[in-house]
Image (cartoon, rainbow, N blue to C red; front, side, top):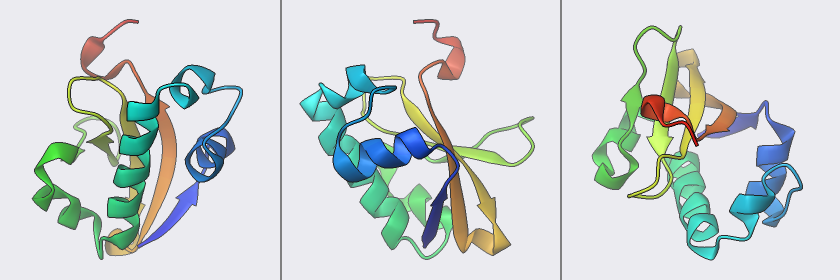
Length: 106
């Protein structure tokens, strides 16, 4: 699946492992390994609904958010990748890395 990033800082974090905006995540080795795994699953999926088959991602279409979907990065942590699906799931636009999902206020 083609992945287009709207958040260039997140793209830099995923591709290089470093970014000033996401510095606290870049220092967490477990999180970075899981982020790379999630990115690879997203890239290899033929359509976004295929992500539902990978249980630890907890893929869901978010209600009341005008077409946003999300996947969990690490079990036991609240960080999720929010994205919007286009063209029948052929292209995913990654919007942000969200740590306030489910009302968590860090």
